[in-house]
Length: 247
Ligand code: HEC
Ligand code: HEC
Ligand code: HEC
Ligand code: HEC
Ligand code: HEC
Ligand code: HEC
Ligand code: HEC
Ligand code: HEC
Image (cartoon, rainbow, N blue to C red; front, side, top):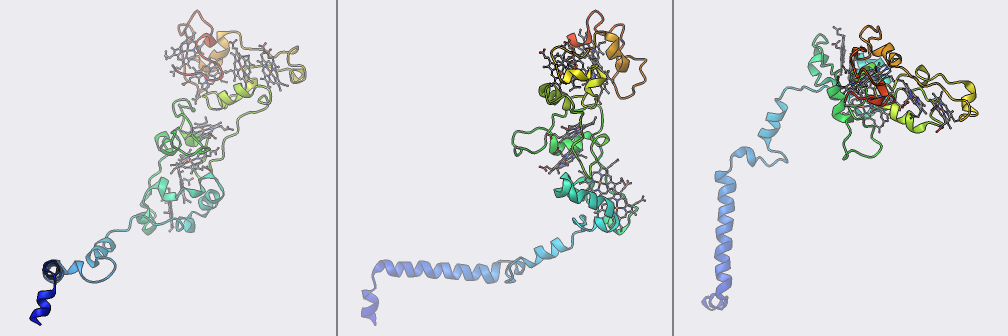
């Protein structure tokens, strides 16, 4: 026996000591030092599970809203916002479910939509993005886009077959909803012999003043004093009429 022990190489004996120390350490920590909540042997720490399940539920989930707001749910299901949850826009709504008098948030402001739709290079190609500074800056998004079914608004397109560039510039400008023909008188023949039969072009300051002068009753157009604003010049010497900017 002694001989056998002697024949074991020195390094193995030392290794055995090290292993013994490790095993003792692990056993001591496992059974005498760690709190019992960490060693209850299940997949998750029991006290964590209890802590999490004790929290108040604040989100009601993706489907329950349809029980009472079937019209909105139906509308959204088929539209571009089908992947956007009700509560993404209206905020956590569990308390609303329990008592409908607790109204959820209604984020109708521009800042909110811009959160997802402002131009950002890192967004996937084809994701609909706008430049919020240029895209109809004076109105709330929901005056033109229904948040539950944001069909792209239709702009007048009758001229875009030949004037595609002007049409696409105008599409994303403050003048998006003003038809080409409210500024140009276009004879039908222009579409057949465009170079010989030409439409009119505005030629006075008063023309733009129709909507923009202080006295105009066109409510949605920002106002200027026609007598003093850029007085000696035609409006389009400073503003491009198909995409006017405030500058
Ligand atoms: C149990 C039925 C019920 C469910 C489920 C329900 N709602 Fe409502 N909700 C109502 C009622 C009723 C009103 C109208 C409250 C009022 O006008 O006093 C309302 C109003 C609203 C309003 C308008 C608040 C306002 O300021 O006018 C929003 C937004 C809304 N609900 C969103 C949601 C969302 C999001 C969900 C899903 C998480 C949801 N609701 C689930 C019953 C429900
Ligand atoms: C993209 C954001 C967005 C999503 C997603 C969304 N909403 Fe709305 N919702 C709005 C905004 C903004 C308004 C305010 C509209 C207004 O003031 O005219 C609104 C208004 C409402 C109203 C009250 C006004 C009304 O027309 O009766 C209800 C109810 C409502 N939403 C329910 C829902 C439900 C249910 C869902 C999910 C099926 C949902 N919403 C998804 C943005 C959203
Ligand atoms: C959480 C992110 C998110 C928010 C917030 C959001 N949207 Fe969207 N929106 C989307 C997604 C996703 C699509 C679908 C894109 C697709 O089909 O590729 C979309 C599509 C659209 C489209 C369709 C554009 C087109 O021509 O393809 C319009 C318009 C739009 N949203 C307007 C709004 C408005 C207005 C608001 C604010 C009330 C809003 N969105 C808030 C994510 C969002
Ligand atoms: C005065 C009406 C109006 C307002 C206000 C408005 N839009 Fe638009 N929006 C349009 C029109 C018109 C189009 C062009 C549709 C087309 O190309 O046929 C459009 C297009 C879009 C598109 C699609 C762009 C693409 O690449 O397909 C998105 C996204 C959008 N708007 C989001 C918004 C958001 C977000 C706001 C608020 C910050 C907003 N819109 C405010 C009228 C409006
Ligand atoms: C069949 C193609 C075609 C269609 C459709 C068309 N145009 Fe034109 N348009 C032209 C061409 C070509 C010119 C001449 C361009 C040039 O001389 O450089 C022109 C010139 C113009 C001019 C400038 C006239 C000038 O004297 O400088 C205006 C304004 C105009 N078009 C407006 C419109 C409007 C508004 C519409 C839609 C109602 C429209 N066009 C439809 C082809 C077309
Ligand atoms: C708000 C009024 C307004 C609207 C809306 C408008 N235009 Fe113009 N357009 C003008 C004015 C003003 C000029 C003259 C600019 C100049 O003489 O430098 C002009 C010039 C033109 C020209 C001459 C070439 C050029 O670029 O200067 C064409 C072509 C034209 N418009 C086509 C269109 C088409 C197509 C649309 C619709 C997509 C349209 N316009 C909408 C005001 C408008
Ligand atoms: C039919 C009415 C109408 C006519 C005509 C018109 N505009 Fe406008 N214009 C508007 C409206 C409406 C807006 C505001 C749209 C919005 O942002 O909601 C606007 C916005 C503007 C803005 C402000 C842009 C900004 O960023 O705030 C300028 C500048 C402008 N127009 C210049 C012109 C010029 C120059 C002409 C003449 C060539 C003209 N407009 C003709 C209705 C009109
Ligand atoms: C000499 C250059 C010049 C001329 C000409 C000019 N503008 Fe402007 N316009 C500006 C500048 C710069 C601004 C921005 C600073 C400001 O509001 O005064 C502006 C702002 C505007 C705004 C936005 C006002 C607001 O409160 O948001 C409108 C609308 C406008 N102009 C319409 C017109 C119309 C219509 C004409 C022709 C009658 C015209 N402009 C002629 C330079 C000009």
